[in-house]
Image (cartoon, rainbow, N blue to C red; front, side, top):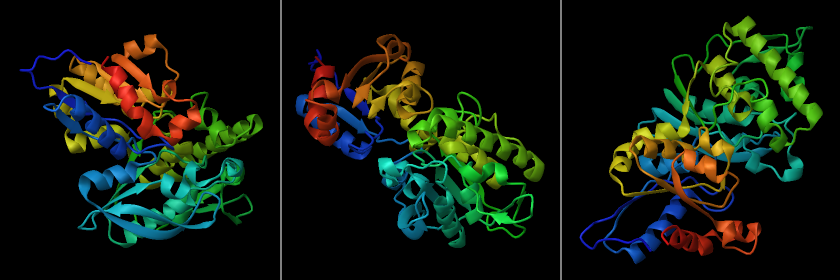
Amino acid sequence: MLSIQNSKLLHFLLAPDKFKGSIDSISLCTILRKEIVSFYPNAEVSSFPLADGGDGFAQIIKYYFQTEEVQVPTVDPLGRSIHASYQLTADLATAFIEMASASGLALLAVQERDVMHASSFGTGILIKDALLRGAKKVILGIGGSATNDGGVGMAEALGYQFFDQSKNRIHPTAALMTSIDYIHKPIDSLFQDVEFIVACDVKNPLLGPTGASHVYGPQKGASVEDIKTLELGLTHLDTLFQQDLGRSVADHEGAGAAGGMGAGCMAFLNAKLISGVEFIVHEIGLEDVLSKADFIISGEGGVDEQSISGKVVGYIASLATKYHKKIHLICGDSSLSEEKLKAIGVEKIRSLVSFSSSREDAIKNPEKYIPLALQSLFN
């Protein structure tokens, strides 16, 4: 345990993301807080469960802002009927929508992943519902998607039309992207005077080796040949953005998020792209609390290269560095080297898999191993 003078009141800050597929960040904070208080009854523990714009974004919004949940009939990435929800403020002015709830990878079994035909249409239905209810501001979290369609599915749900060279209307997916000859923008659109903000969890550009298709295509079911087709499709789409919508967004930071949904939101909706975790941190005033904390604990399910580029762990670590503080991490597993962890200011890291009998056991029973990982941090 930590060596502590009795006269000193320790202030712990808990600011983790979820452990995807295992435990949400609110429950994680509850377990961590209980353990800390059991060891240090006089400690002050500030819990700030977080999200980065991906899965769990809506849950965190509801936690902090007491929004109302709206259930909507929509479709999943493969066009099957489902119900999904989004969050709406009491005055109906602002909607918080999580793309993953309608167009997320978690909605598909592994064998169902089909990025060539997966569509963001279902997310567009959620946005349309919010606009029909009177929302004048839409904040869209776009992580965790199953798609690589550049947002064309979403756009079609909102009234955009896509035509081939024979002037036949097509319903575009990633597989049909290069068949689009021109895009017709709706004249009297619901979203004309609406402010759109997109909360991203990554900073990738649209195209190239660090773009949407190459980096995230494989996890969505894309083969090597599929990736080539996806890249050609998004390249063609950006040409159409220039031709028909008057702008190119390919090189914008975050354009490649969610299979090009970042780019699509900018082009189709004139959206502003922001960091999802930065948005939440700013709105809840976490930075001020962090600046005064003695110990900062963050984490997520899998700590890897992506964690330090747009994710919760990387951003909290950067804030800790700003205030000359060390950060401690608890995670499901980590693939980052000790050198990289030290470089971002991580003092110690503990993974649940190091205490469990298997990775599957750690994922299934996080509440069993989180206390062990926490105790190990302070030994």
